[in-house]
Amino acid sequence: MTHKNLAQKVDWLFTLCLNEQGRQFTYGHIQRATNSRITASYVWKLRTGTMSNPGLCALQALADFFAVPLCYFADGGEYLEQSIRVAHSLQGNGQARQEALRLLTEHANTLSDRALGAVLEMTEYFHHFQEQEFSAVQEPVLAGRA
Image 1 (spheres, rainbow, N blue to C red):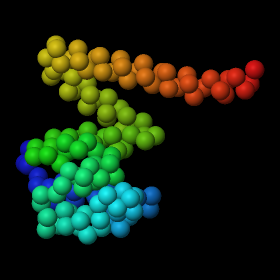
Image 2 (cartoon, rainbow, N blue to C red; image 1 turned 60 degrees about the horizontal axis):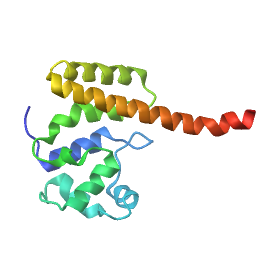
Image 3 (tube, one colour; image 1 turned 135 degrees about the vertical axis):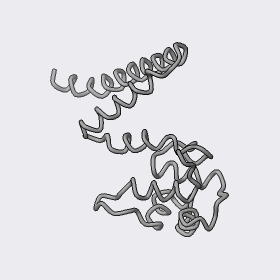
Image 4 (cartoon, rainbow, N blue to C red; image 1 turned 90 degrees about the vertical axis):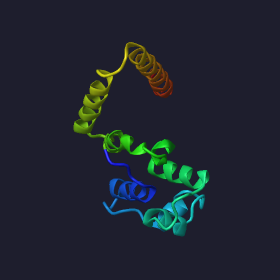
């Protein structure tokens, strides 16, 4: 895997994450969506490589906007691209869900017993949390029908 610089990573996010019309987001849209935590010109500078050493607040604003982990922007963070791509395509997409499960299984098969145990604990936690969240949402609906 070749290492990407920050400009290449930001550009990749622009090509991956499209707006409702299927177009790339504008720099101004990102500035407005982040409540000016990052300016349009700053985004342009990062994407074009004019600026390559941004502050943490700017990177956090980009991470929040594109819904990626902040560590994606760190040196070597491009290893996350496959999971980011799959996660972005999950919304209501059964095929993407199958790809995500295949990827999870593929990675789990290479883990040590200790690491696999940690992954199992984490998935149990999320499973439990999701069930609680679902039942909390359903209770008022069911109560209204009684």
